[in-house]
Amino acid sequence: MTEFIFHGINLFLLLAILVIVSRKKIKRSYETQHEEFKAKLKQASAQYEETKLAYEALKRELSGLESRMAEMRQSSIREIENETQRMGAEADREIEMTIQEGEKKIQAEGAKIKSSLEMELLESSLVLAKRALQKDLAGKDSEWISQMAGPDSGATTGEKNYAS
Image 1: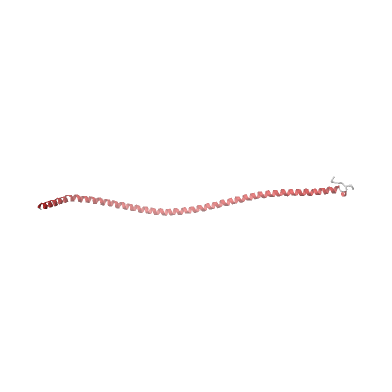
Image 2: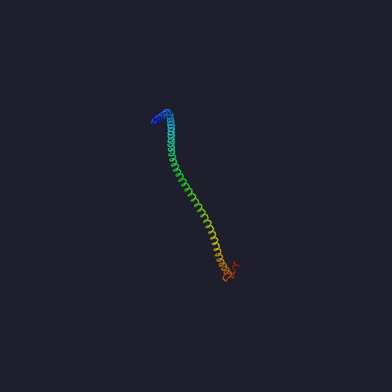
């Protein structure tokens, strides 16, 4: 058992020496790791703050863009409505002009047809009048000739016969 106690004391002394000697190195190692961790944490915190500021700036910019998009949308709607009204008015003017041109053409063609019909009617009237006059004159000529050549004509009394 003395040997066992001797080994125990020996182990205890060895561990004590190891602890004393390595304690400073282990402490330095932990302190170094602790400092590195603190530096990384500080850096991450700074990056977080920068990212948070950038996020807020982007959020404000996005809000501004949304309002700008709404303004652009309203402006576009107004422009579309104005253009629609302008195009409608222009179409109405063109329709009115087309109607007026059509009416003018119809009136011109009507005048031509009326003139043509008047000419045909005049020609027909002249032809009928000519026939009626010819018929009337033919009947009166033969009556006049027979009066002039007949016994009551005065040819025997010495009057002149204008028919001969």
